[in-house]
Figure 1 (tube, one colour):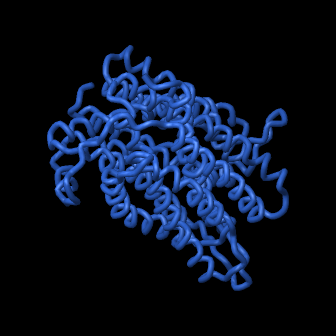
Figure 2 (spheres, rainbow, N blue to C red; figure 1 turned 180 degrees about the horizontal axis):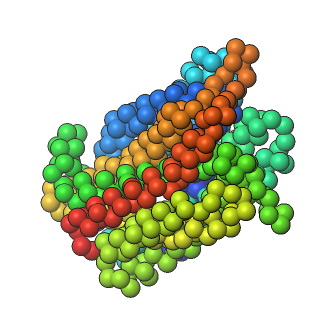
Figure 3 (tube, helix red, strand yellow; figure 1 turned 135 degrees about the vertical axis):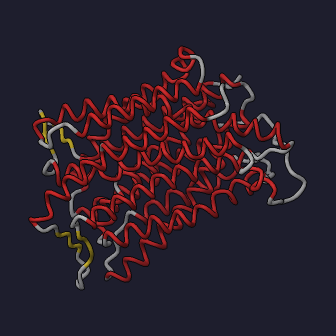
Length: 448
């Protein structure tokens, strides 16, 4: 039986990765790259698409490499212990805007973003794989997974809620604010990742293959539960990715910027914070909800249905700051579904890893969990790229001029189309994805 301190330690891993680095990358990067850093929408979209092609190779290779690691710290923990500082450092550099021209900025953004994806993979794939070797008890796996999600959403809540207030505290230009906050948040993420590696334990020994082989990669595509779960994971991150990537644009262009209500500053990070705290609460309730409905599969289907229905509902809210609390209420309802299914997804990956070990005779835990990380990055980045592309199609133009200054222009005639596209990207597009996710979960063959 794992100690409470170990569960907290495991939660710190996703508090760093999911609650800080990935949360900021998902919600702030599209707007940061176009409106602050000074990339064009085409460059922003291409960068995110290129990074996904990079991840298709690096994620499964990292999973296979992690499975074969042997050290005094275990199989997966050393990647967290020694990857903590690089994770925080590269994240900080990525939020720094250098005084360069268009070509220099493009080189900086592409190099640092791809490096960030590589470091994130080197830390997060082994982190996810830890769940498969800390315990063989299914209920305890659900508990660890729930702690993980609560840690991610709790830290996401703190990060997003404090962001506008920290910006005002730092002062100066927006580029300066992001650079300072990037350094501070990067340091916190590094410390949390290191603590996770030191506080957790590997109790189970993976059944290792004798030597490196491409067979585990081929076996994945014969693993029907893995195929469905990977598609479900991509959909879940597409769903979140559209909403997070477009939230900054929605507050800026549809609602006229920050909305202040009774002294509370509601910018795009604070707006999404209401969802974070809801996800945190219902992520903690997910194991009890799963027991109540009977299986993970049924619980996931209920959660996906909630996401689909409430996303459609958001589309019909008037595009007016006066309805900000109605919007917040619907975001909270949507986040109930997200909070319920998020822990289930990682627990289901552990089930698929057990299924693969039983079927193939050797462990491919790291490889299977790497597909979870890959689907996370694939869904979030592709949705971010589509947001940039679709906004460019309807008339949103951004870039850096010859003096190195960021320029954003939208013609008056294009503004209604831009606003409508932003609104649909936050509501109808995610609703379609949630509906597809519901169908895939229904077809998922493991009935635990």
